[in-house]
Each structure stands twice: as C-alpha cells, then as structure tokens.
Image 1 (tube, rainbow, N blue to C red):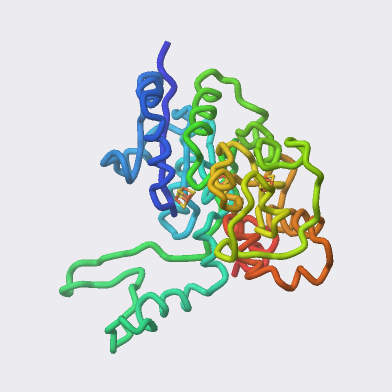
Image 2 (cartoon, helix red, strand yellow; image 1 turned 45 degrees about the horizontal axis):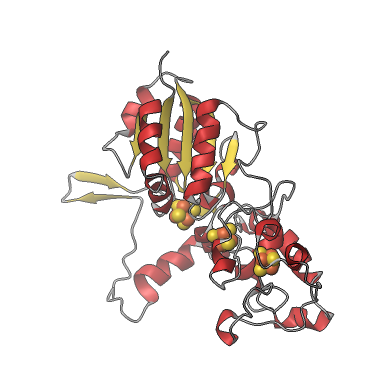
Length: 318
Ligand code: SF4
Ligand code: SF4
Ligand code: SF4
C-alpha cells in the first residue's frame, strides 16, 4: 500500500510550529517513515511553488498550513494547497485564529509600514522610502514583493477540515494529531483535534479538583504584582488566567510555572468567539463589577491569539 502523501506550508508564521514537529523527537522518525512528504516550504526543504502547482488536484492526502494569511503570496499558496490536498489542517493558533501576529489588524498597513521604515528613532530614512510591490532596478530588473493586507486565519480564505491549537502546539498534542491522522481516527470534519477538555479541567490548581472551597476574585493583579500562593487557582488570586475556556492539551504548562494561561491552545469545543467567551468567563468570577475597570489592556488580554478570527477582528478588517 502506498504511503499517505503529506504537504506542509508555512504562511505568515514564525517557524515555531515547525519546531513543534521536530520536537516529536523519535516519534518523528515513525511519522517520517509512515508518510511521503511531497512538499515542505519554506523552512525544511528547498521546494518550489511551481512544483506544488504542477501536482494534480487532490493528489496530496493531508496538507498542514501554519501561520496566518498576511499577504498575496500566502493567499495564492493556501489556495493552491486547498486544491491539491484532500484534507487541509490549520496547524497552530496563527492558522486557526490569526495568532498573536494578527494584533497587527489594530493598525492599518500604512501605519505599520511607517512605524517599521520611517517613524522609529533609530531609523535613518530621510526620503521615507517604503518597500513597494514592484520596482525596476537598473532599468532592467523587474522585482516584485507580495502585497500586505490584514492578517486572516486560514478559514477566512479557504475551507479547513481540521484545527490544531497552540503557539506552538505542544508536542504531546502534535503526537496525538499525527496518530489520529495516520490511523484515520479523526473527529468529524470541521473539528479541532483536541482532548476536548478545558485547561481548568486538568489543572492541579483547580479548587473543584482539589476539594478546596471555590472563591470569587476580589482583586486584579498583573503577574509582576505578587507571587501566587502555591497550588492556589491563579484566577481566584486575581491573575487573569484564561484556563476556563482554553483547550487543555498543553499539559497545563503556564499555571504549572505560576503563570496564567493566555489562551494559546485555542477555544474549547463549542466556543466560536474566544475573546467574548473569555470576557464572560472572567466576569463571572469577579466579586464586584468595579473590578472590570482594573483589567489592563483588555483587547490584548482577551484577543491576544484570536483577534483576526473573532467578531471584533472581522469588524476591523478593512
Ligand atoms: S502559532 Fe505561534 S509558533 Fe506557530 S507560527 Fe504562529 S506564532 Fe509561530
Ligand atoms: S483558572 Fe487557571 S489556575 Fe485556575 S484552575 Fe483554571 S487553569 Fe488552573
Ligand atoms: S497554559 Fe495556556 S497559554 Fe500556556 S501553553 Fe497552555 S494553552 Fe498556551
């Protein structure tokens, strides 16, 4: 029997999701032996887009796309991937929900280019030269760059079959996903590949699991404003932990290190808009309404990883 064909494309991401695949360690050898990797660009192999474009439509069994769709090149290649792949997976929170880099949508492209190339104190650019999508060099070389636009999660550009959260996905989670893929034990199309449990459900600090009395949050604290009590729920202590609505597939990494969860795992099943659900979950924990005014920087807190995929993000899209 021929091996399943796999393609991997990094769009507007940082490469961290690729590292999460490498983190599979010896399991990666089993995965590599079990699949035929036909395309992995631009990080791992010197694959050419024209090679991908030349493959017959539907000839690749599984395509993984990491990173958001941020420019015209990403837009083109994710559409090519969709045509070539039978199953397309949004891999990592940038692809599923826009990711931390979709906070750029709070600004216009012009503002961002000005900040990067003109406005900073250390920039020496008196002629205010900003990269263009095309230019002629030495009167003969026609050079082009992709056009920038607002960041989008993958499913705002093409249809997506499965979603895997995390920034990057924890290797245990990646292993579970690859095992599900290779054994064909996948959830219904459109699902997140996840245990389905919220972080709180698997967190050793959860008072429900430890038999301690449940308490309301009486104060709001930033992480540098104190040291959490050992074993206590961070949210109850005032540190804004998004564990109630975040998938708990990472092994409770942040609360185990005394840091509140920021939500990189993505929403638990059934939650369509992470930010609004997070606001609702936190609000229900507060002892009094006035504490809402003390929440620092709510957009970055509640939409840190999901702005582009949220209802708020869609309103911002220009
Ligand atoms: S999800 Fe995180 S690790 Fe993956 S590409 Fe985006 S920023 Fe990088
Ligand atoms: S809110 Fe955070 S610290 Fe508290 S139980 Fe949930 S994940 Fe753990
Ligand atoms: S605890 Fe939350 S922010 Fe930290 S790795 Fe897990 S899902 Fe991501």
